[in-house]
Length: 88
Image 1 (cartoon, helix red, strand yellow):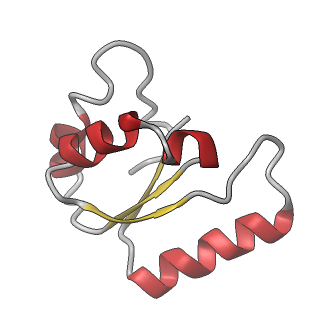
Image 2: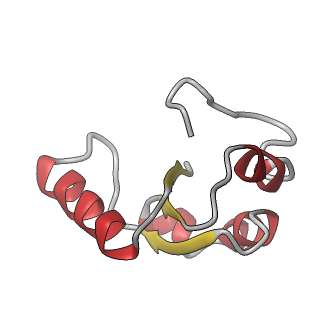
């Protein structure tokens, strides 16, 4: 997804599938922190994606260190991800 396509607020999760379809995304990697990764909200995001989330990278946290960014990029390449979704 273009980096300038940012969705926040009410309805963002519900509209995720439509947005991913609009951009032809089929293997997205979701990036979030440990708290949201363990939350029921993650299931809502996965469901809303219509099966387009290939995996979740949950080692992100505030002021993400360089090592975490490199690990996320490596994971995205390994998955063959065609998009990265930031959640949280």
